Image 1 (cartoon, one colour):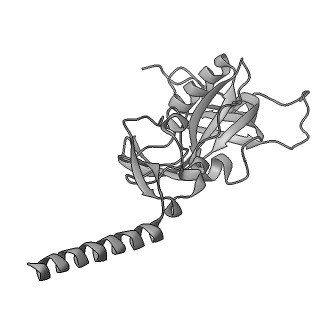
Image 2 (cartoon, rainbow, N blue to C red):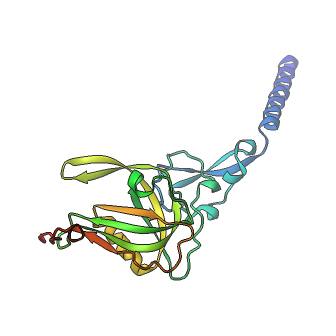
Image 3 (cartoon, helix red, strand yellow):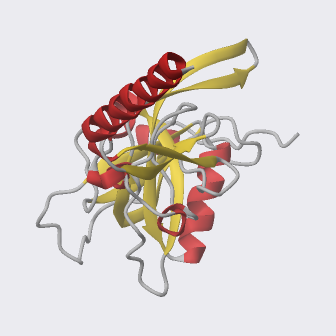
Length: 231
């Protein structure tokens, strides 16, 4: 009996010492938030698509030690896979819109749209090519001028459905700041135009841009711009 008791006491101290040793190496624990499932670009973060997880503080960066209140309603400009730890440097910056501005996100072609030459804070013109829209002549039009770029995400691959079936295309999600009425015109073009392009501007572009044309069609090439037959 005495031997068994002695063994039990010794085992207790050995286990206690081991646990204390592990705790001293791991240190204190903190809470981080991970994606419960894959989160698409610009999807609002909520308590439904995030889960709290306790990890050793030494394993979590300062930028990952966030509260749920810091994350709810915020967005990330690229796809996040399930299990990814969310950190503050992944979040789209909080809006700095004027009272008469609205943020609108559109996908532009990865090659013809920006080609890596446009960054947040730059000003761009938005061109749209209308080629297959019933009731409109085939043309290129300047939709909006001097638009502020809010954010630009990395390349994304999206699946497009066309007459030939499904196809994949590389796009870049871009968030723009626009007055409400102008945001409507860009939304229309994003939905129905064959192509939407961002045209980068010189850094010293002034307010007056006299002489720049707003549209171009076959008539400007000596042909005849014919409206497509409405369906």
